[in-house]
Amino acid sequence: MVTKPRTFYTIRFNDCDPLAHLNNSRYLDYFLNAREDHIRENYGIDLKEWALRGFGFVVSRHEIQYIRAATYNEVVCIESALIGYGDNYLEVEMLMYDKDRQVLKAILWSRFTHINSRTGKKENHNEEILEFARQALVPGIDTSKGMNARIADLLALLTIAP
Image (tube, rainbow, N blue to C red):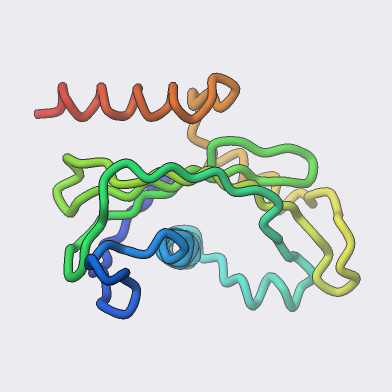
């Protein structure tokens, strides 16, 4: 199973500010669209089909840091990974790089709380979701140290990469 899927996107003009930088709020859209693409293409999970079955997820927390500007017409690589889970939530890390994955542009940590899409109430994961989480989990990413420590680790890896 691919645990760190990635896709490439071109930054669009209408998503940018007057200086041709990707608008801060649009980073979330790029990240969330990428994650949806990743889970559909790599895990065969269609969120609409899951919602019809009663499985829903709402964002209960985002933490984002912008490191280098993404600019108009630039091709970026977005990578996502499940980095934690509990009885009723999934924690996902999303990273935006330049197309060559040499420059870290932004990082997003999101917590998705499981709700029953029929009742709108929080619900614990069933065995199907837990099995997915066990298989997709990327171990070793310690969010308790904070995002700045994670960024330092990622930047250190970039400086030693071939």
